[in-house]
Image 1 (cartoon, rainbow, N blue to C red):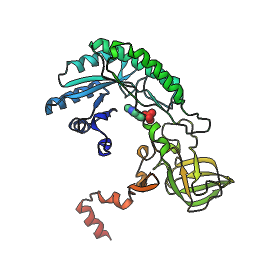
Image 2: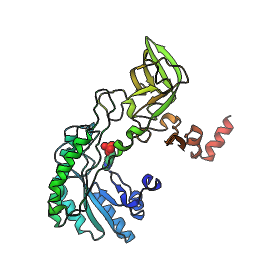
Image 3: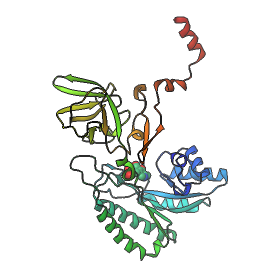
Length: 354
Ligand SMILES: Cc1ncc(COP(=O)(O)O)c(C=O)c1O
């Protein structure tokens, strides 16, 4: 829905992910999206039923959960029991079902097993495995696949010691893989796809919060911000990270000031989880200063528990060639109350008690 609203070409959209509701599927079909990627047998049956009901055809792919785990990546999503994709060992049955449905146009496979990979050899291994599975599928159905989707996984550096993905090495690895693939009739006309979500936009975004209070407690200094993990769960280390490490942080109006103190950056939520930076070295801070957390273009607002304890949601500003646009306004507590229905009997009882 977001991609359609954002003006993406429907044919470029692949809808993947577990838990697609009937209305998600209906929207994808009526919006004529490129492919729907099946994650389970029941989902396949639901898509077929919706197609039959509406008299439409669906371009589908099968997301595969491979037998081996990809070694590395901050968050692994395959190679083990997972809600994502169809287990490789059950792929044959799924293909049989998909091929038996006249309303399905079976296009290909999707294999995405881990995100935030900074070692390109891990990605290449993942792609090789996908090619191997795709070859077996093409041979099973007796025609080349139209799509092989390698998924996401391209990481960006967040923490001290992280090294950028070596794109030269990655492109060499992909080129050598494609040399093999080009000679193989199983892949005649096949389109190979990657989904570089984080890689494209992660570095483009900064989360900015204002210091509303500064306090010291038992020798530790806290900068208390007007937003925290409710706006940026990942920076608080609570989005699946086992070790909590600091995102790159700065006082954005004091970029050239020397660091003189070590502080913790905390949000306004009443939970110790709401810490966006631990023992961060920063210039001397004042109430009203703006704190910027870098590498926040992906998995920041959209991966956060917005409205946590009814706190406001953040605005979003797009800067394009030096010009700024408010693209999303703040969701305030009053807005949140607007869609709450209070039964008249309770309103009357409340008024009477006043
Ligand atoms: C199906 C699918 N494609 C792409 C992505 C984006 O991956 P990344 O964050 O590694 O760019 C995700 C993230 O979970 C995903 O589930």
